Length: 412
Image 1 (cartoon, rainbow, N blue to C red):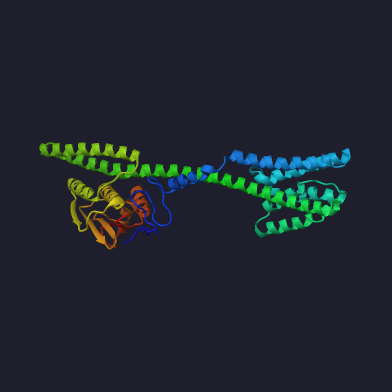
Image 2 (cartoon, one colour):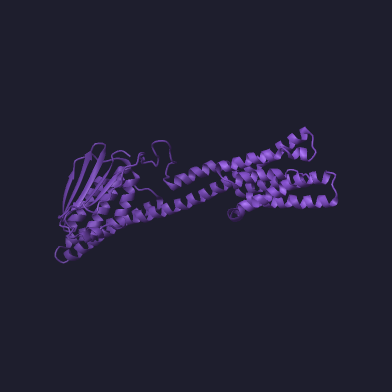
């Protein structure tokens, strides 16, 4: 056949109650992005808000700065040395803000290596050149190396940072115990800052992911609503149109039959109204066998001979609804777009699957086939792919017969 659309079956089949088989289960009544969003929201129940996580990072950084300032003020240094070291500490802390906080991501991207080099110089030059202790500010450099560099380079840089800390104690005239304390304190403070910063980034990404999934869930619900309206009302309105045209032709010659057709139109209109309400509420179950009988009557009213062959028992669960929707859309397209005189409907079992074939002799040219590829067939493709089925659409070469075949698992 030409113009064939195929959707292969995924490994995990979906059940009619909204659960997924295989490795994971989705909450009842949810699917796709909605279920992922709900699961992510559940996992984020104990995660602090963004602002609180950011505030904790700022408090920890401010604490290290305060410790360094206290060290400077309590050492035996003159006013000039105290002033210079205080300014130095504030500059190192300011560069750490650039390396840590989310709003400075642009600066990190453009000038990250330069700010890292400047921070290292401000933290290490005073003790090595002037013998001035900068307190915990050297630990900021270790954290910045881990944050600014990537992969193995970050940890190599951190190792070089630890080696650079080792001589700092003797240079400052500290005893061996003080030197060990200086190395351990700055090494741990750098790891604490690195870990807290990464945690803040992770929390920020989680909230962004939740927002993106919520947006996607809303979009999928809109698509579901539009798809269901098209599938349900398209069929009903097409049936009403056909029956009204028949009534118009019969009202003078066969008024009793015309009255019967008007009664059918009223019943279909009421069903269409009920369908709209069920679309607003959510999932709607349909029966394939009921739709086959309805399609037989609609086709007869439109002057189309219907040949129906049902050789398999009625499917259950979601397979029933999906195939009923396929039949509705097929009949709707037939009434709207083709000049068919004969329609063949077959429902058969093929191993673990059930197969619905809808064929008509109304295709005249390849352009006619193309016209039938509208929103309705795209909706059917999405529905069938979602339950692990296969859809084939097209016309046989050199033939006026248009064929639509839908195959789905019999129990989903």
